[in-house]
Image (cartoon, rainbow, N blue to C red; front, side):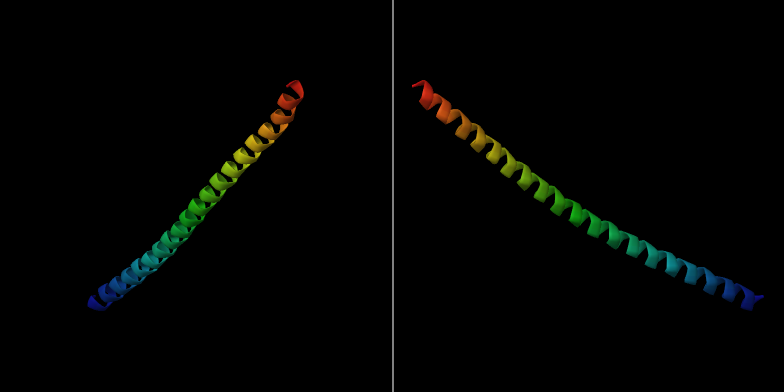
Length: 71
């Protein structure tokens, strides 16, 4: 009977170890995804800012000649 219990315990511990390894792997993947998301957010924000500046520049460039013509 003790042999059976010890094998059951060994099997249980092996399963727990597998679970913990799998969970660690999942956590690592999540962390990597979060880092990538943060980088992407920053990149997108920078692109949006640059785009806004370009749009402002184009508007200013388009408006200035018209003002000169009116004067």
